[in-house]
Length: 415
Image (cartoon, rainbow, N blue to C red; front, side, top):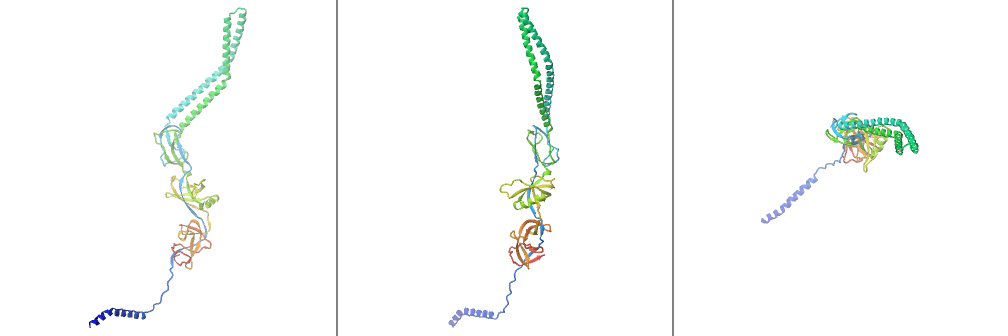
């Protein structure tokens, strides 16, 4: 009996496993067959844009800074103290408006001194003219007196030979004759050089007049005025400062000559140069939220090494009143129309040179030539492209799909 229990205990697990295997086999044999469903291809939801092939004008977006070719640094013409500075930095001024006023007292004294020198020389010339007139009259008298002395010497010489006159009388007469000859020579020299002396005085008078006029000009320059309509960019002096000739006083720039300098990329240079040569290139911009209208004036005459383009200078036609030089500006330039082009949303462009057309709910790849940016009918900016085989009415995917490929099935979610 004990042996039988031992045998049953050993074989009991195997019996359980056998029953389980038999039950599993029974269930497998009696199972119900379910037909397998075929896998359905996924359709990617996309938005589309209907193509309209036409001539579209590209829009070139640029960035630049406000500047002016007419920036004047006004300097002092004289050495003087600064009396007043009526202008303030940032003021908008008109041509002829006073900006800085200098003390005039020293310059007034200098002008008075020059006037006195000129008056003295004028008086000297009048005296010289009278002296010349007297010399010309006296030459004849001096000549007559010399002739008398010549006759006197001759008479005394004859008397001296006959011993009717003493040698001392003859000697005195000869001395008088010699002095008279010298006086006559000096008088004749004065008459002969009268024109040269007058020329010397005239030269001194011209120099004195020039010094007087320069002093008067310096006195007129005590008030530094604006040479054109503009805005004060910087004041460099204050009342009480001592300035010398040539020292900067104030900087201002012409509001009518404001420009925006912007670097045009190399790939857009040819189109922009062609447009400038054939017509006026219009642009619009914005500085600190203020709208501007501009026109392309010219291109810069130089380009720094390594610069990716050439600077273009746009003249501000409207909106310059509140501009400040040095401020950042964003521009949009409208280029000549590109024929047979299409404006698409930026999302429609793949790999910078491919779009996908929807044909029978599948994507069809088309290589395109990128022409820049342009405005869509809804007023938003898009990418301007040209592609062979693309026709008006075609539907182009305008949704970015990571798995985009030729033949991919799609489902249009909006038309």
